[in-house]
Length: 302
Image (cartoon, rainbow, N blue to C red):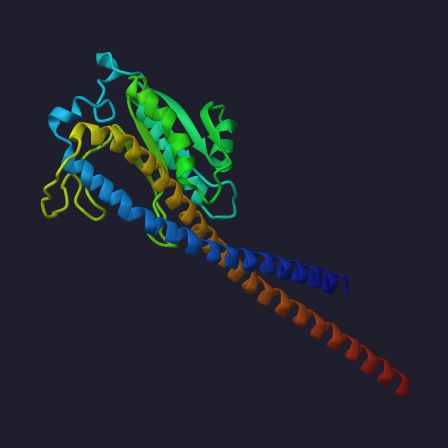
């Protein structure tokens, strides 16, 4: 009966694991709703900010603001450094969520290095930082205190040093690697160029290189377009970082909920197999004992 005791131990172990994964699924479902609300709240503001910039920026103004100016390539005397901000989570058990983000960051870093740039890596999240530390990469910034409730202050602290370095001509570009929250089941990793600022960008679903049709607007500018852009451009960069943070946080909860649901379902299937095996073995043992008793009684009578 030793094997039967082993099966009962495995059944208890799987039952305990299923309770944990089920609990984590429920917690992620609860957090996902709040994180999704933050994403939905951030999108209209970001889109309105982009539209105002698109209306204000002209070719003449673009040359006056460093955040709009495109630096020359390293071969032509331009900056030799580029920055990549990698957003990952602090915790695992989210399926391939973090590994997909790390793959996207590696792809972007390799592309920049092939163009002759030295990449300054900025990490937000324990998983991405731990992976590149293992590879021996040095970080210009490490943040593991942001968590799944990012704020505008967090985004400003990450963006301000990069805005300053880009304005001084020390950086050729700044890319943000984050998860795009489309739905709880669809959270692909994407790379967003946040510096130099792209004054005109296609809306979600619009064809690449084509601005979505919208009515023209007339603005009364006070005090001037230059003064407004001076305030809006850094705000736009900080908002891009904030949007990446909230979308990554929501995507993390969606990925964890899906992973824990799959784990709970798999644990249920394993329990069915173990219980069936245990019952068959127990029935075989009982049948054998009955046969031995009947055979012994028959031998005594004979």
